[in-house]
Image (cartoon, rainbow, N blue to C red; front, side, top):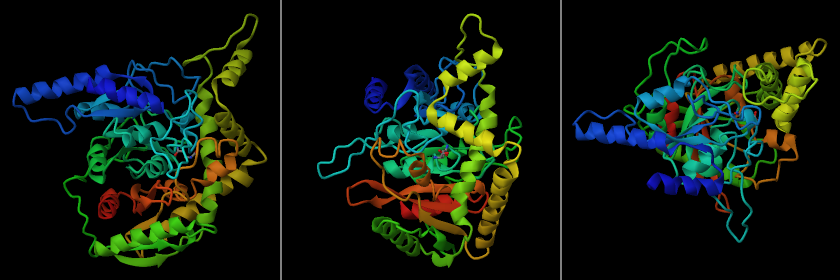
Length: 454
Ligand code: GLN
């Protein structure tokens, strides 16, 4: 019954695309039986979580919030979700998101936008974006429907929605979580990670999501550390870098104040603060918005009306007509925009000017970080340049939407672990997030700094 109440609360926010309370109930019953038999409980025994609709779930519709995958029921389970079920968790439903994880507000979903459970104070009742692309995950957690959920992050899709809704979320080092069974957006950037109410819950979930998987060629062949057991908010001996290039023109005073507050908290926890420089930061966003669409245009070529979901076919049409009609009807505007940009930057004559150039910039950005690690152990920045914006505010202006990712994309391009934790409220009472970026494989350092801020 509790699950039914929770699911109806989530309905008002449009957080789920499909509800699967039976899956969660079965996990709860397994946990009860294990408890009654005096067995040691699994780490997530009976915990009901939400699964972003980007993860393939066996027999349960998986759409990436698109029309083209409507009705697609995978015959296999993603590695990450399988690990969570093996750890005893159950699934309350498939969470809404931006279509194919492209967006920062959850407004590109074919199934309608998610509404944040937050409202700005002072009589302003405009419904707010929950962030994106993992907006169903952030809204469901912030509304206390689920204690945790999966997200994926290609350029900020775990961190920015976490920041907008006052929760925590970590994108681990590229390769920590298997991409097998995760609908591909930009394969060299996509990473799964947990979102939850606390840093500790993120650590527990991540331990049960990460790990080597021979089915993903970019999966890291490393043991999963005991992040939760080793959590410590004591940062004595740690150097925290403050990248000066993140102090962008026109940064709102309250974001500046949030950043300063974060610096003070980390100092209180024993850390030393140093200013560092990441000189190529301003090229990260343009490079990301070339590389991500380029990879997306290739990954999305597989949706042809033959293999999955939707097929648009009229009498007398040939195969080409069927492809065109299916893709025209099946993809939303933002997805089509990315495919157009991606195929353009990869086309003969433009490849070197755009794609090759963006790849060079990506290397420079990775080197900026490598250089910074000679001066510090972790970096602290704001997660996003603003608090949650109203639904509809940026949906007609793709560039304004893309600019919201300015602080999250550089660490994605470099494959680094990065986390958003709640840092305070803006003057309208809306949550703001602080971002901690770590060295490759230093999720522990990131989580520890997160704990010190939390
Ligand atoms: N907002 C970014 C984009 O639209 C990031 C999305 C993501 O991380 N999946 O590409």
